[in-house]
Image (tube, rainbow, N blue to C red; front, side):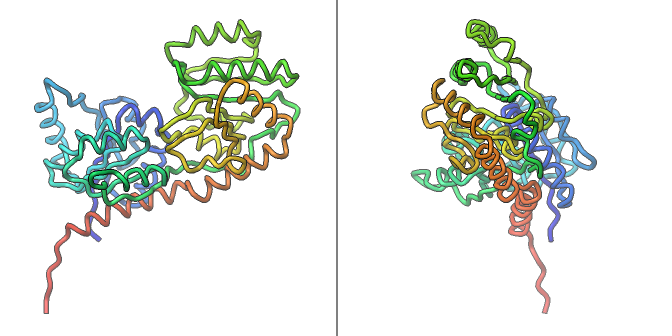
Length: 360
């Protein structure tokens, strides 16, 4: 089997959305004996360094210094030329294509949002060896692109940990704990969730709401919680690099606005055995209403309040959905399967480039 040396490019957006998954992938690729370097202009990528896998932090390769900085990056990689260059999201596609061209390497692109699909069609990189879609809906979009489909496409689902213990209502004597990781920006739905929490309290179901995020609307959201009389029950906190401690201590996870990008934090909540209440996500295939989550097709404040009330008032049903979600993650989103299939793609591309001597 030919040796594989992979350069994986990751930008800030991917670190925000997929940070824990990237760390799982790092560990898995070590086990697969794939030589890997992470490339990023975001200092947070240093957290991906582990044993033989190192992160290389470089200046952003943008105009007017693009040519010089690209050359510096290529020179830094030259001692161990990559056979595969893998861009983890759309913000890295252009740079990955340029690096792949410099080393005549195969280009692998991960697509985890509809925005990634659009960017891929717009840029049409020259050296695509494989596209990796994070879900079947995203793979379907790529396979149906016109005028010519992007090919070949493989669905490799993100891997996260699945707990044997269901967190949802594991402590029946404790106040109900609700977690949300949406940003504090317009359109994120956090305002509707605060309104829904206030309605839940008026109906006699007190709950603690933990909002983990940041954004320009934080002061307005704090004011809203005071105006609705629930500020003692609402905690604002910055995002955490690892949600595990929070999720394992909570009961319900809410995503209050529709999305078109894969949300790993929702998947983590499922794996931790929380009852997930979510708006629709056109990039997801893991949100099965009544089986792995409660999906609010119109996530208004009243609809979210109704979903929360049904969840806290019928705990056996909520725990059943939470158990189904954890089992779904265990079956379809294992960390080992993600690493195995990613390494297999790298090796298939390397094998296709290999030459063999034929002797009589």
